[in-house]
Length: 478
Image 1 (cartoon, rainbow, N blue to C red):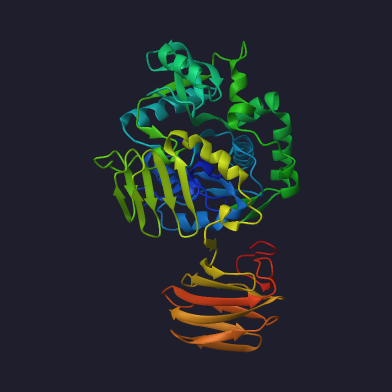
Image 2 (cartoon, helix red, strand yellow):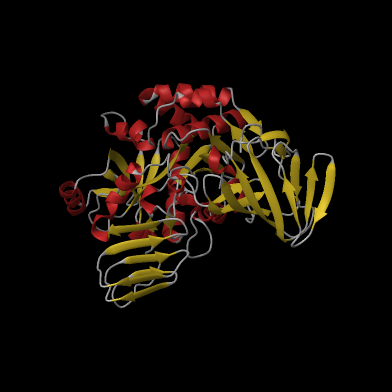
């Protein structure tokens, strides 16, 4: 099918903290099929027989994304790296401009990367119909059949029915209050907004010029002044920072309700299992409830507990004599919330002191192009990390001004450079790196290399680094 998927892999997924964080957002969480949400989305494009996808994600998550894609059979056409998060409208605009400049005026299939969809015949048929309509002109979206009144979704009002399969698009509505959601459900005139859209690249830019011209101007300049970096394209940061932060709905779709703008805009009902996984209850819904209607995952023990969501990612979780709670445990954080008020979790996370508490921003495992590291312990003057270097990869030739490092090999074979000295370290062997020493760690073997690194000094930040050589062409980037 001549349809170009644009996968939007930004966002923070604050409702799913502490599993989801700014530097490990919801698209990268692993589902029950042992694939992450973004991996499932990329696989979906392959199952549909579409062109290679363009993926838009935040620059800070570039290596997390490539790490997850390396094991897949499909390679993206390009990964566009947002220097800062600006919501979905600018993300789609970057992709539309890039594709129009390089591949012509293709029909785009814009899709979130963090939804679960049952890929049944209804879904495949809906995509085929949407592609045909978008090829003729107009914006097409998929609307989800409403299962119950819900204030967590946007809504779409159906217009005149066409051929018993799809409708004119009448109006988009932001998330309603409880009373309005009940009325929408009872009227049978509405669908949930799936966030999936079909249109040509030029049409999206035309609508954006009408309704959000500032976004278009900022994105055009960012692409014009951007640079190609292998699989990545890096829009210009200064230009993109001037862009307004707006969703696709607010920037364009809600404006389609004005008189004279319908007619060629369509909504296709999708009667397939679908979830945006926007809450802990929905994220855990693939689990089979126990006899007390608890959704449980991990090393969890319960006694007299009902209607609760209980997840242990690291330690043993014991819960007794409570109902309607959400308890989520990770290695460095615990969330406890009222299940009946879980929509307020996002409000709580937005109040957390991110500057003084780093685990609200990132997990202890941080991804890099050479592999990843995990923080095992830390204080103001020391930090212990476990480094995993993939086969054939190497850290940059670098030096630190404020810290010393001690490396111990726990598995694999390390090739080490210290100023003019070269050495090979095997399991249980170690070396000391004084502050100011030029050094490099390489894995020239076929198996992964694991190192325990102990840092000590007056400053342990990731920006205490001077790079002299780097195979990944990083300069100031981590």
